Image (tube, rainbow, N blue to C red; front, top):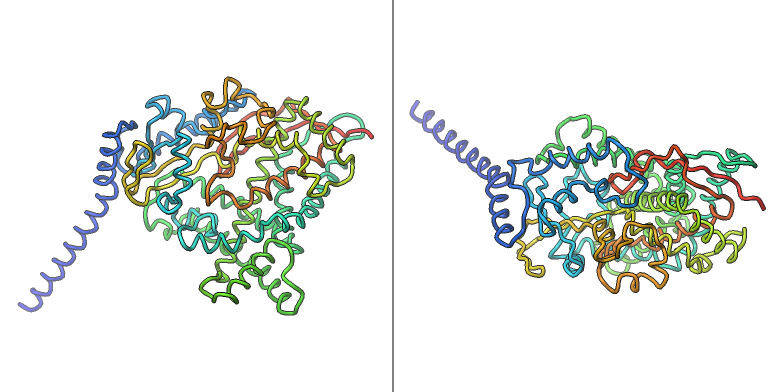
Length: 518
């Protein structure tokens, strides 16, 4: 009995130590650490709401978002209040030097151009915050850091080289021609017809990325698009709540569906890759699409330096998933806001059409001719200013860091609000919220005065690798649309930009479209 009692005492003592350790770590996570960080930030003149246990500002953020999303806004490009209501309210309440609470994490709003430049440039000191697995769209280069990021970026870059991009323009043309042929069937020869363009443009960019990423397997790519769209909505829904470590293992409806989507997307991509590898082994070559170029780049690196310098098959799959999602999302939002703004500003639409017809008439453009579209380029740059697809970026200080006069403790998050920089009256002038492509008539550098204030594709080493791809695709689509159709906003259009994964039209994009007579 004495021995048994001694073992019981030891067991209870160990259990008490473990429980105490876990309780201390939980309290450190949800209370002591946030309060230390809050004190440090306030001592440096930063302001924000007092820390609320566990939830921080999440409940207020959710309330604000639901409020602004409940109704459309006026037909204005002054969209900050609707797109990022939590940032707008925080800045109005506390001023430029302020912070929000994303759960237990204080998040400083940083939009001094020189501070933004430093943060984007110092990729090791300021990294993307760790994202729970269940909330990631992919584990591709966009979510990697340090040496792993550098390795993947090096292997992905060749797929987006300008010389390779030229070979993809025919795929842009083919996908766009298919969309326009559908419009031809619907729109009468005389008069206009209302079209919901958001659906068409999402399908267009899905087809483009399917063809350019997977070549002849683009039909399978369409299924990936549908699944990843569903996943994005599920992830955004989860982003509006605090993540509890380990919750991804709970058999919730969201978790089960995300797991199903990932499994199906992975198996679809794997089938496409295996088919391509079989072709390569039989001597048919890797192909000139993004998948083929990535496999070729990876193979060369492994042969030259060894397997540890290349990607595993799992990593190739994740990069393909990222190709698909990022390539489709960014360009579809750029195109839909371009159509909406040109439907509102028909004078600019006419100028753009005249430019297209003067340069290459009704025939399809080649890559070099796309680069001569000065007016369309100005229009796209202005659309990206007013409606940046990636409207803000978040980084985390990985170590105690200094930015300007601020000393940021390790663990503090930073919001880089691209949309605020793009809509700052002090930077852009009194017409900041007006559509004025002429501001880019002499290029980006002249428009910004060399300041770090225009960031639709980010900046620094991690600048979007697909920016030239997106711009070439958008120019091709707009040129082909303008050759054949004129359009204006429909009376049924409701202006309602909302921030999902990208900045999208909440209620779609209804335009009146008519054929241009020869």
